Length: 177
Image (tube, one colour):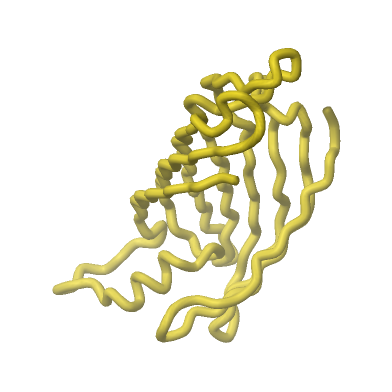
Protein backbone atom coordinates (compact mmCIF):
# COMPACT_ATOMS: atom_id res chain seq x y z
CA UNK A 1 0.00 0.00 0.00
CA UNK A 2 1.23 3.48 -0.78
CA UNK A 3 0.22 6.84 0.66
CA UNK A 4 1.06 9.94 -1.33
CA UNK A 5 1.08 13.62 -0.41
CA UNK A 6 1.51 16.01 -3.31
CA UNK A 7 2.21 19.73 -3.41
CA UNK A 8 2.32 21.45 -6.78
CA UNK A 9 3.58 24.92 -7.54
CA UNK A 10 2.86 26.38 -10.94
CA UNK A 11 4.40 29.43 -12.51
CA UNK A 12 2.72 30.32 -15.76
CA UNK A 13 2.80 33.09 -18.31
CA UNK A 14 0.73 33.60 -21.43
CA UNK A 15 2.75 33.15 -24.60
CA UNK A 16 0.66 35.69 -26.53
CA UNK A 17 1.16 39.42 -25.89
CA UNK A 18 -1.31 40.95 -23.43
CA UNK A 19 -2.57 44.51 -23.84
CA UNK A 20 -2.38 46.89 -20.90
CA UNK A 21 -5.49 46.95 -18.75
CA UNK A 22 -6.52 47.97 -15.26
CA UNK A 23 -6.68 44.37 -14.08
CA UNK A 24 -6.78 40.91 -15.62
CA UNK A 25 -10.05 39.13 -16.18
CA UNK A 26 -9.38 36.38 -13.66
CA UNK A 27 -12.01 33.98 -15.06
CA UNK A 28 -10.61 34.17 -18.59
CA UNK A 29 -7.05 33.82 -17.30
CA UNK A 30 -7.98 30.74 -15.23
CA UNK A 31 -9.65 29.09 -18.24
CA UNK A 32 -6.64 29.78 -20.44
CA UNK A 33 -4.17 28.43 -17.88
CA UNK A 34 -6.13 25.19 -17.35
CA UNK A 35 -6.32 24.36 -21.08
CA UNK A 36 -3.61 21.78 -21.94
CA UNK A 37 -3.79 22.74 -25.63
CA UNK A 38 -3.34 26.50 -25.16
CA UNK A 39 -0.05 28.30 -25.82
CA UNK A 40 0.84 28.90 -22.16
CA UNK A 41 4.42 28.72 -20.97
CA UNK A 42 4.78 27.18 -17.52
CA UNK A 43 7.35 25.96 -15.05
CA UNK A 44 5.62 23.31 -12.94
CA UNK A 45 7.27 22.02 -9.78
CA UNK A 46 5.74 19.14 -7.83
CA UNK A 47 6.89 17.59 -4.56
CA UNK A 48 5.52 14.17 -3.54
CA UNK A 49 6.04 12.28 -0.29
CA UNK A 50 5.10 8.58 -0.18
CA UNK A 51 4.93 5.99 2.58
CA UNK A 52 5.03 2.25 1.90
CA UNK A 53 4.14 -0.97 3.63
CA UNK A 54 4.60 -4.59 2.71
CA UNK A 55 5.85 -8.03 3.68
CA UNK A 56 9.57 -7.49 3.07
CA UNK A 57 11.84 -6.52 5.97
CA UNK A 58 11.95 -2.74 6.25
CA UNK A 59 9.02 -2.15 3.88
CA UNK A 60 6.80 -0.70 6.59
CA UNK A 61 9.42 1.95 7.38
CA UNK A 62 10.06 2.91 3.75
CA UNK A 63 9.34 6.43 2.51
CA UNK A 64 10.25 8.24 -0.69
CA UNK A 65 10.27 11.87 -1.81
CA UNK A 66 10.06 12.89 -5.47
CA UNK A 67 10.76 16.36 -6.86
CA UNK A 68 9.45 16.80 -10.42
CA UNK A 69 10.15 19.74 -12.72
CA UNK A 70 8.03 20.04 -15.87
CA UNK A 71 8.56 22.99 -18.19
CA UNK A 72 5.78 23.63 -20.71
CA UNK A 73 7.28 25.01 -23.92
CA UNK A 74 4.65 26.39 -26.32
CA UNK A 75 5.36 27.59 -29.83
CA UNK A 76 2.74 29.71 -31.60
CA UNK A 77 2.82 28.78 -35.29
CA UNK A 78 2.20 31.09 -38.26
CA UNK A 79 -1.23 29.53 -38.81
CA UNK A 80 -2.22 30.52 -35.20
CA UNK A 81 -2.08 26.88 -34.05
CA UNK A 82 0.24 25.67 -31.28
CA UNK A 83 3.07 23.19 -30.91
CA UNK A 84 3.56 22.33 -27.23
CA UNK A 85 6.44 20.29 -25.75
CA UNK A 86 6.24 19.07 -22.13
CA UNK A 87 9.19 17.03 -20.79
CA UNK A 88 9.22 16.00 -17.12
CA UNK A 89 12.35 15.55 -14.98
CA UNK A 90 12.17 13.76 -11.60
CA UNK A 91 14.66 13.11 -8.85
CA UNK A 92 13.70 10.55 -6.19
CA UNK A 93 15.14 10.32 -2.67
CA UNK A 94 14.97 7.07 -0.68
CA UNK A 95 13.10 5.05 -3.32
CA UNK A 96 12.60 1.56 -1.82
CA UNK A 97 13.70 -1.35 -4.00
CA UNK A 98 13.43 -5.06 -3.18
CA UNK A 99 16.52 -7.11 -2.37
CA UNK A 100 15.61 -10.76 -3.11
CA UNK A 101 18.80 -12.12 -1.51
CA UNK A 102 17.95 -10.70 1.94
CA UNK A 103 14.13 -10.60 1.58
CA UNK A 104 14.24 -6.90 2.44
CA UNK A 105 14.16 -3.47 0.87
CA UNK A 106 16.95 -0.99 0.41
CA UNK A 107 16.57 2.69 -0.46
CA UNK A 108 18.31 4.61 -3.20
CA UNK A 109 18.47 8.15 -4.62
CA UNK A 110 18.29 8.56 -8.37
CA UNK A 111 16.89 10.28 -11.45
CA UNK A 112 13.68 8.85 -12.86
CA UNK A 113 12.89 8.24 -16.52
CA UNK A 114 11.94 11.29 -18.63
CA UNK A 115 8.34 11.21 -19.86
CA UNK A 116 7.29 13.80 -22.45
CA UNK A 117 4.51 14.81 -24.79
CA UNK A 118 4.58 16.81 -28.02
CA UNK A 119 1.17 18.17 -29.02
CA UNK A 120 -0.06 20.07 -32.10
CA UNK A 121 -3.25 21.91 -31.11
CA UNK A 122 -5.85 24.21 -32.65
CA UNK A 123 -9.07 25.86 -31.50
CA UNK A 124 -12.42 26.17 -33.23
CA UNK A 125 -15.95 26.98 -32.04
CA UNK A 126 -14.91 27.09 -28.38
CA UNK A 127 -13.16 23.71 -28.52
CA UNK A 128 -9.45 22.92 -28.43
CA UNK A 129 -8.31 19.88 -30.41
CA UNK A 130 -4.89 18.31 -30.61
CA UNK A 131 -2.87 15.38 -31.83
CA UNK A 132 0.63 14.35 -30.92
CA UNK A 133 3.01 11.83 -29.45
CA UNK A 134 3.88 10.80 -25.92
CA UNK A 135 6.82 8.78 -24.75
CA UNK A 136 9.47 8.14 -22.16
CA UNK A 137 13.26 8.17 -22.32
CA UNK A 138 15.08 5.83 -19.91
CA UNK A 139 17.81 7.43 -17.80
CA UNK A 140 19.72 4.20 -17.14
CA UNK A 141 19.61 4.84 -13.39
CA UNK A 142 19.03 2.05 -10.89
CA UNK A 143 15.29 2.89 -10.79
CA UNK A 144 14.90 3.35 -14.55
CA UNK A 145 12.58 1.09 -16.51
CA UNK A 146 15.34 0.86 -19.17
CA UNK A 147 12.52 0.99 -21.73
CA UNK A 148 11.87 3.51 -24.48
CA UNK A 149 8.16 4.28 -24.87
CA UNK A 150 6.36 6.00 -27.74
CA UNK A 151 2.73 6.37 -28.73
CA UNK A 152 -0.08 8.60 -29.96
CA UNK A 153 -2.15 11.14 -28.06
CA UNK A 154 -5.25 13.17 -28.87
CA UNK A 155 -6.88 16.14 -27.19
CA UNK A 156 -10.45 17.42 -27.16
CA UNK A 157 -11.31 19.95 -24.43
CA UNK A 158 -13.79 22.77 -23.93
CA UNK A 159 -13.58 25.56 -21.37
CA UNK A 160 -16.83 26.43 -19.54
CA UNK A 161 -17.78 28.96 -16.88
CA UNK A 162 -17.06 26.42 -14.11
CA UNK A 163 -13.85 24.90 -15.52
CA UNK A 164 -12.59 22.79 -18.38
CA UNK A 165 -13.75 19.35 -19.48
CA UNK A 166 -12.78 16.94 -22.21
CA UNK A 167 -10.46 14.09 -23.11
CA UNK A 168 -6.67 13.77 -23.37
CA UNK A 169 -6.12 10.03 -23.91
CA UNK A 170 -2.76 8.59 -24.90
CA UNK A 171 -1.11 5.21 -25.38
CA UNK A 172 2.51 4.22 -24.77
CA UNK A 173 4.03 1.27 -26.57
CA UNK A 174 7.43 -0.24 -25.80
CA UNK A 175 9.74 0.79 -28.64
CA UNK A 176 13.10 -0.36 -27.30
CA UNK A 177 15.04 -1.45 -24.24
